[in-house]
Length: 329
Ligand code: SF4
Image: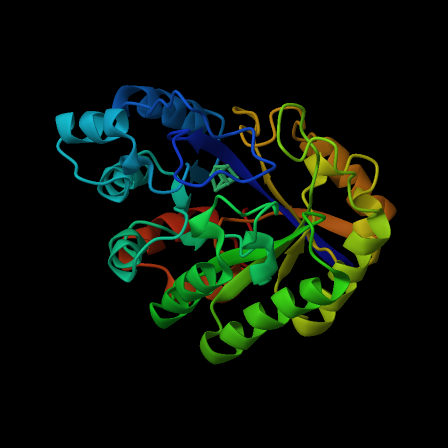
């Protein structure tokens, strides 16, 4: 039987570009931040529903309320935090037939509890377990929310709450090869206890003009492959992804070394975090998969093995999309 490579048809909603972190490689965060109002979000959600997307990916900067202008807008709309606002937007998405997958950043257990009831799955990149990257002059020097202690705590709380979860590592931001393995081992240690990690992303750093790390080279592809091979060894059963839009021309190579997922591909919205790296078409992914003897299948934002963990209110929606083997019919 052929192996399966998956993708999810999604709509990407960049709720706000305000962020209390300031990572050395980021082009998403803004010094004059804005936040999308509910009407703008609804317009995008409706577009996604018409394009027959099944997933809505909510992404935003971490703790945007630290910006007075964002806090004011939220209060005007009746919310004290972005998480409360996101909760209601997830309900809007569900009412339109979309399954939310939120990337809320480093949040509290209470936040996770609130979001669990309206999300099919959630995500937070560990990026690295290396505390060294938070030292002066390193990528996460100005990013308290990227401290590994903070991120691993969120992964652990998500496990306690049985939330199907996506996480991953970022390769090429100053970590050593050993620290990559250590990061994967830290994720595995938590997953061995809770079994909630459904997907792991091995993401390669891409230098972006205008950032502090603009002159740092991309990591050699061999480092990405080594991390992928190690991840396959440690997590043989879960989805493994190297983002295809960050690696045009190398997608087949990664399938050959253990990847089995292409992640979210949107027919409606660009990748707002990596605006210069656009999604491949589904047809292109199908060709790449076939060349490696894989068959391409569309998946939901929650993997079939994790359907049982999904909140009751989403189970009917999932059943309406999923075929017997759990992939989209
Ligand atoms: S946490 Fe994300 S949005 Fe915030 S500065 Fe870092 S990369 Fe940018």
